[in-house]
Length: 251
Length: 251
DNA sequence: CTCTCCTGCTGATCTGGGTTATACTACGAT
DNA sequence: ATCGTAGTATAACCCAGATCAGCAGGAGAG
Image 1 (tube, each protein chain N blue to C red):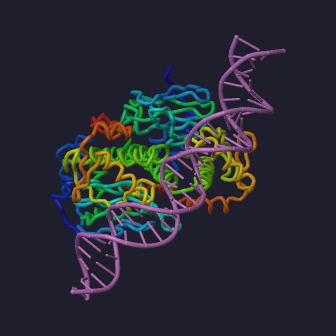
Image 2 (image 1 turned 30 degrees about the vertical axis):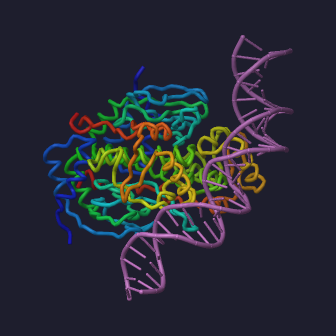
Image 3 (image 1 turned 120 degrees about the vertical axis):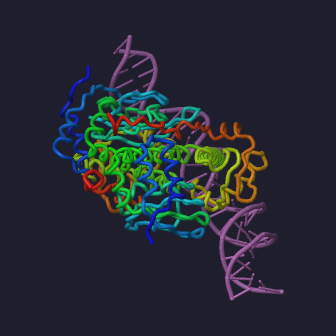
């Protein structure tokens, strides 16, 4: 059944507002999006590689990942999505998915039909701009991942991911950067970092022994943020898509 | 001096038109963008890492790359840009560059002020949408690079890049996918592929011996496209951001 | 209450690609 | 002419991370 889900949508609105100013009518339009809730169990694919999709996938609770896959089945995650994120806003424009979406933990998602998103974007140019900004934020994380995979050691990569997730969780109001829910298996982490699970295990052990990371239940604790950031060469600048003026809309 | 450069801008217009329908007035607006030409010699940086920029960088001739850099100076290219591409459309929204832009060969670029782009985007919602689509196309290449760097062998990565560039050059009307200008050094290729120049050299030799690639002057020839694509696991789908209806604008 | 299967963990061994160093062009500058 | 500089090529050696082959504990399914 498709209907309005104000509470989860306010998460999404919050994410947009972090980067874009939105008029009252635009905020209402976001909160009024028709959508459909679904719960997906850990390890299930939400969108299959190559699917033709007609809705976007908004994470409400849990953790989801965009991925691509080789012929032999090995996966590479290309993005992690926390509550408030839309995993595949690009599908509005490229409806044949050249990616898949996987639930890393038990995850609640909202399926928002493309038709709805197109409608609000055309009625409110400010929202179209906000969607563009959202895509740019996503892409700048992607660019950092390229650097990490291409040039950094296993430890530095993992450290960078932890810093990135910490800041994103904090920005989203879902924890502190030094302690946040991050319920991911070593296998999934390996798929994100372009490593094997064995090596992730060994590297995490070294980092734990070095007091850089601590996994407590389903949360991570980063006690020595500065040292971790130094190892990662982490600079949060790439996460700051400037909170936008509305110039493009109102000029 | 800032003025209109219709001929080079028509390249950019062509690129937009491959993905978006544009009304006559919108096309004129693109061709009428005020801009400034510049020639940059090979290996010079066009935009420095961390620069505050107030214009976008449109490649008119040559080859440019977006990159990021580690503390020790090692580079990782995150995108290659051929004539018609805007290297940093995202800078309109994120004017503090968390990337650099480098001329790989002697390159002619057009600096298009953000103010100009914002003006046409606000006057023509169809252009704002076209810019969004452009960003999405850029990001889907980025996602493929993540997969290549994370999970593929040196040979497969290089093969994939050659296939990607072939298709892009062909789409841009700058050659055939099996033979196109690609004047890149092994060092630069190494920076793109997350490898060392030494290993790129070894791998290229193997591929040459295997009749997969041939460098003739400043062009590449790919005589056995199918075999190359198989090695690369190359599927051009990710390059196809659907030529767009104008729904978001005219709905 | 047992039987999986998943997850974390470990050790032994192997290899793709990194590192370092050197030589051989072709070319642009003086 | 010659010198310096990029770029390609090569060889010898090294190492981070992959591969393979397990084991143990815990949680869900029957």
